Image 1 (cartoon, rainbow, N blue to C red):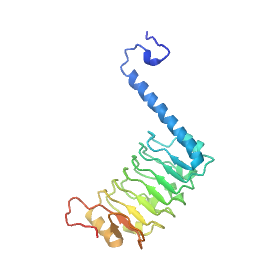
Image 2 (image 1 turned 90 degrees about the vertical axis):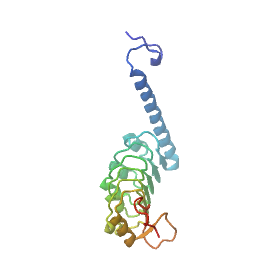
Image 3 (image 1 turned 45 degrees about the horizontal axis):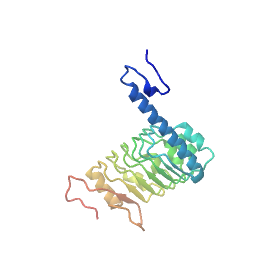
Image 4 (image 1 turned 60 degrees about the horizontal axis):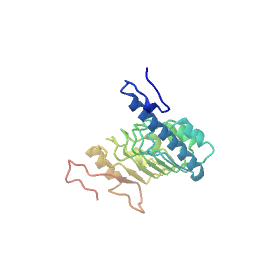
Length: 216
C-alpha cells in the first residue's frame, strides 16, 4: 500500500503519472488564483485582463465576479479559447476594446453584433476561415484586426456595408490574388494604418509568390 505523509509529494507509489497529474493540478490552481485576482483588480479599474491565463473558455465564475462592474476593456489574448459564447456580449455590454488575439477561435456568435460600444476588436492569430459576420455588423466598430488567420476570400460588398469600420487588418492571410485585386480597387490598401484616411483602409501584406505586387 502507498504511504502518504503530510504532503502527497512524499508518497511512494508505482504510478508513473502521479507527478505529472500533481504538477498539472498545481498549475491549474495557480491559473484559478490568477483569474480571481485579475477579476478583483477589474472591479476597481473596469479593465479586465485575463491574458495568458490558460483558459480554454470563459468561466461562468468570471461573469459572476464581474456582475456589478461595467467593464470598459477586456483582454482574453494568449489563451487556448476555441469558442466565444453568447454570454460575453450579454454580460459585457459596454466594452469598447476587446482583445481575443492568439487563441484558437474559428467563429463568433451572432450576438456579438449587440456590442454597440465596441470600437476595437483584435482577433489576430486565430483560426478564422472568413470575416466574422457579427463583427462587421457592430455599429461602432472602427478597427478590426484579423491578421494571421485562415481567410482566403473577402466579400468587398460586406466590408462596404460595415457601419463605422475605418481599418481592417487582413495581413498574413491566404487571400487569393483576385481577392487582393478587388480589395485594392474598392479600398485604400496600406501596409500600416494612417491618420486622416477618407475611407476604409485595408492592411495587407504582399504575397510571397508575386514579386511585382506592391502596395501603393
